[in-house]
Length: 152
Image 1 (tube, rainbow, N blue to C red):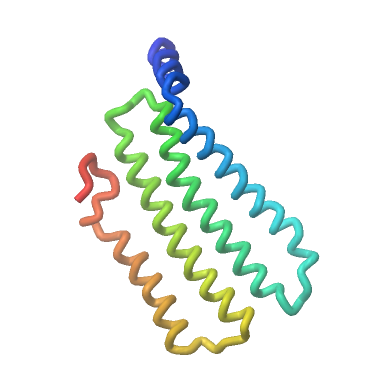
Image 2: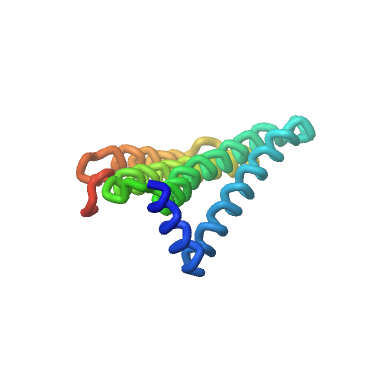
């Protein structure tokens, strides 16, 4: 097993594209995590008038982080995995995490926009949120085959 890891690490280190992708992925995840932590830490400095918007934006970035952690984290696990034949399950679940995270990101930004500009929950807002909910429902259908080797 150690020999497998050594060969895999040598292969990764020898391929500049793989090395760049992994480096970017790690830096990107750290960057988004730091943004979420700083936003959370500085939430007390937001004035009361804008706190509702700030909370929604914080949650949107948290959804982005969780979604990307699923997707990018799955890619990193795939790079270093010994069990290559089961990586499609990890990658599929990672893609599902990303899709759900992005839907929540868009829904939370839509609500932050509504709150910031003091708009009512009108038909347009309800349609946009409804589309997000429909997207989430569609993602759980078994036909998506998130964990199969060959996606539809």
